[in-house]
Image (cartoon, rainbow, N blue to C red; front, side):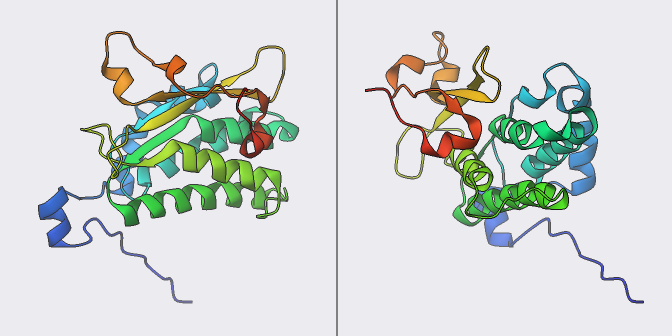
Length: 214
């Protein structure tokens, strides 16, 4: 039997290193760094909802490692019937910013593939037609943004906008979306929640169908 060995790519090209300082973090180093926050990721109270932001997401190596650990912890610690809902809340807690378009697309794709693989492995329908898949794709699209962390802007010159995805007290599985800008995190007044659209609370697996308040 022949074993295929996949070589890990740390540099895509010299030009990209020179122009953007792009060097990918090796997987073993990613895992060692995440061990430092293992309690927040896997064992602490409310581990599913602990938020993580990767300001230079690259092709998603940190993002997918965080998601994988959260999903594994959900599998170990929570009842199986809660896995679809809790896995969506885990996705909602992971944010990333990446400047280069190809990396940005790769990061989103690897996150969706990891999510899909988790549910496929447990026999949970997660095809493109399901609410589970569509909600996951929506959260990934909203949380992993193409832009420049230093300027807090997109390539089009717009403010990078994220959302908090709050659980709704007394309504298990419900979420409330509150948009804010990355730039507001650097200001004395903090989050600028009041500036943007106000969204109706809904079940997290229906987040892709959400509507704004009139």
